[in-house]
Amino acid sequence: MPEVRRGPDRLAALALWGIALGVMGTLGWILVDLLRFGLGGVSWSFLTEAPRDAGRAGGIGPILVSTVWILAVSLVVAVPLGVGCAAYLAEWAPTGAPLGRAVRRSLDLLAAVPSIVFGLFGMVFFSQILGLGFSILAGGLTLACMVLPILIRATEAGFRSAPQELRRGAAALGLSRGAALRHLLLPAAVPGLVVGLVLGIGRALAETAALIFTSGYVTRMPSSLLDSGRALSVHIYDLAMNVPGGEGNAYATALVLIVLLMAINGTASWAAEAWLGKGWTR
Amino acid sequence: MSPTGSMAVMEMKRVTPVASPPTKVRLEARGLTVRYGRRPALDGVNLAVAAGEITALVGPSGCGKSTFLQSLNRLTDLIPGCRVEGSVRLDGEEILAPGCDLLALRRRVGMIFQRPNPFPLSIRRNLELPLKEHGIRDPAERRAILEGALRDVGLWREVHDRLETPATGLSGGQQQRLCIARALALEPEVILFDEPCSALDPLASGVVEDLIHSLKGRFTVVIVTHNLAQARRIADTTALFWVVDGAGRLVERAPTERFFRAPQEALTQEYVTGMRG
Image 1 (cartoon, rainbow over the protein chains, first blue to last red):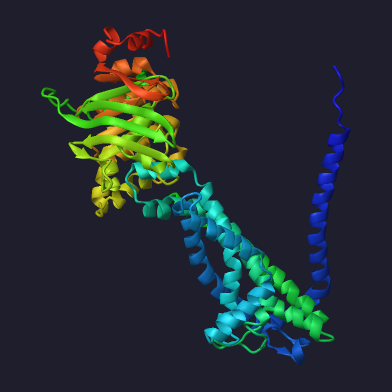
Image 2 (image 1 turned 90 degrees about the vertical axis):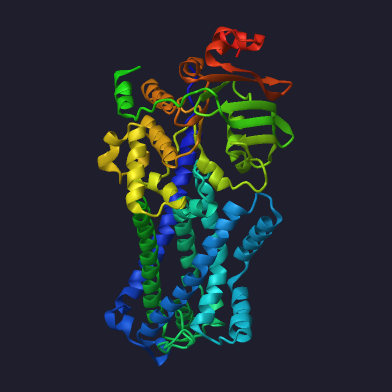
């Protein structure tokens, strides 16, 4: 019996391991770097105090608050719109229908639009035409536009992953399409929605360009959604690029941003699992 | 019949069959033609289904039995590119008419599929969700219907203490009986079975078959089956479908006893004796 040649197989395995290690290594390097230069700067007072001396001293209290508000506005707007649009695309638009095709194509184009363009659009549309000015509301709405394509496509994939049997079974029992959507297909789409949320939140939290023009860069504590507010990523950008001697706090802020991102992602997956788990008995 | 099977059946409500003569027609298809795109799946089928009887549809794969079944509750509407022509009347009322209320129709004509399809919900919610959606608001009433339906299918004793657990955790046979209970709970007039036993093990298959047999009289049953012995055991009327000139057609419909003993058509003769199909 001829010997099976294992050489190429081993080489491929080695290469794949190398790639995987490289990916992990990059993330590890960033984290180590952030911890090394940033951890010393993070303290309770750093998280709560207002920045002083253009951010070289003081903390990031108001900036954290603004960031959370901007994110909240974008999600409150994007999630219902996104789920609704995904449900339409997956469940109502007949395959190959012109409207569905047009919506899908626009979404794919939107997903590829650079964030600076969203920033300019947001500034013109939300800040100027709608008169929201430099405000958390304008920034959050702009982010919502940016996040929507990712959210919709991921949720649509979630709906499509629901087995056809579910739809047939529901129809055979005389359930309306709305009832099937609410009680059966939506729970099935939750994993997709969570993937979209995690990707979307990641994109939103990392966003600088779209926010500078819309929510602005005032470091004051915001007193309403119509106040200007500086997001964490804008703060990092400002400290690193425009403020000599701001690197230390830039690192500390970046560390906070990463931890916040991880916490939100973790919570999202946990909440989805808890909700799905409850879905059995509700 | 297996001992476990008959035990489960003993629990079922026995209903005395409705006096048969004069037989009332519950469902009637006339000139029913179904096309998937251009391809005809069914051509010009005329078939009447008597109320309270069990009608078995037999024939080789791809002869249009399932297509015929699915046009009786218009589940064909869900298939892209599917066109249905002709007439299907339920109690004299045309169901292929554009204005037909599909939700009401499917409440009157229930359906059980080959693979048990419980929703990924609790056993209780599987039964209560359709009831709620069909306007039964009173929780006590829903509970009573739920218990009655589970008793009808001999499942109550097996699951009454775990109604809140996932229905997908039940065995295949139990899942299929749950699906039947879910259909019964809506009190349909007709129940369509699409090879309900072919995905089950022999034991569970026997239990489900006995259950279907017990529905006779109380419901009108149309069952598609590949199992000729099963058709012979439970059906009052048997109909043979066959592909003729590329489309499914009805070859013969006769009282089951005569269908097997003295078929009129040569094709039926060959099919029931195992020479063809």
